[in-house]
Each structure stands twice: as C-alpha cells, then as structure tokens.
Image 1 (cartoon, rainbow, N blue to C red):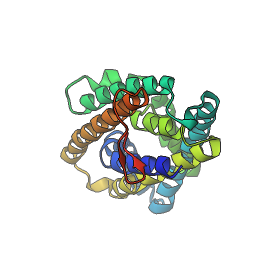
Image 2 (cartoon, helix red, strand yellow; image 1 turned 60 degrees about the vertical axis):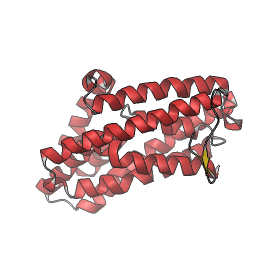
Image 3 (spheres, rainbow, N blue to C red; image 1 turned 90 degrees about the vertical axis):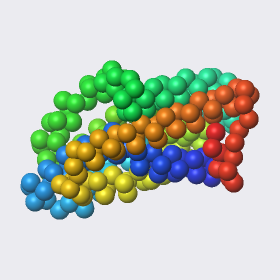
Length: 232
C-alpha cells in the first residue's frame, strides 16, 4: 500500500509541474481572473475548487479500486492490467508529443470537448456553486495523468485504499496549480506556452513509465524500485 501511495504522490507532484500546469493551468487562470473581477476571497475559493476536484478523484479511485479487487490486480499486476498499462502508456506518450508540438494536440484531446459547454456555464455562474461545479468537472476531464494514477490506484487493495491513493495524488497536484491560480494576472502568454512544452516532457516520461510498468507486468522487463517506491 505504501509503495502505491508513494508512486501516486510522485506521479501527482512531478506531473503537476508539467502536465497539470499545461492542461489545467489555463482553467485555474480563468478561475483566478474571475475571482479578481468579482473581488471574491481568492484562497478559500481556490481551495474549494481543488477540494471538489479531489472529491471526484477519490470517487473515481474507489471505482478503480473496486474493479481492481474484482479482477484481482490488487494482488499483482495481472496480464490484462499489464497490457492495459502498456497501451495506455503509448497513448499518454502520444499526448505528450502533442504538447511538444510533434503531433496535432487538438485531435488527441478532442474527447474532452464534450465538457466545454458545462465548464463555460459553471465559470459564468460564478459564486460558490460555480466554483464547486467547475472543480468537479475539472476532475472529469480526459487526462492521461489521471488515467495512469487510476491504474496505480486499482492495485491499492480495495475501494477505500484506492480512494485514499487518488486523494494523495490530487493533493500533490494542488500546490503548483494553487500558485498559478493565485498569480493568474502575472502569467504571460510566453510563460504559458513554455509550460505547455514542459508539460509535454513530463507527460512523455509518465507514458514511458506506464508502458514499462505494463511490460514489467507481462514479465518482458524487470520491475524497478527506488527504496519502497515502485518506479515501474
């Protein structure tokens, strides 16, 4: 369990420095700018936003943990999970290549557009409910990093442990996004473009980790551990 929590924490922390800032950064920037316009209390509103996002992550984690227990992958990365991890890793690598400008990113993330209308309405609504809804919708965004965390959470050993693991993952992403949201007005276009490139590097690394973890689950390569934390 501790190894899974450690992996989820590192995935969230490292991923937040690149992927989250690139993918969710513009969203928290809009929240920050809206709060500035309405002269709302910034810190409580941002914490409410992230709390709602983390609640969705925990719920998804509980579902992943339940499925993991049914399939038996909480007792080890089963062949089916190994194949899923490898395929997902390749997809995440493609997503990262899109952020680096090597592939058309819009096509790779097109599946997330179904949420755009709901998120726009939540953003326009404002107030406490608007912030809560927007945070929850953020938690539902198609995201390779979240998918990788859910796969790890499925091995945690049941719904409650998986939910806790996803909460840890989410908490690790909060500091970077909180700083960006509170400093929304100071972010230049050039800085945001730089963050997208940094995001691409980290997404590719996470994808490679997922693919290697899948291959290790299939006994093609050996697992790698750093202390008590499984890298793949």
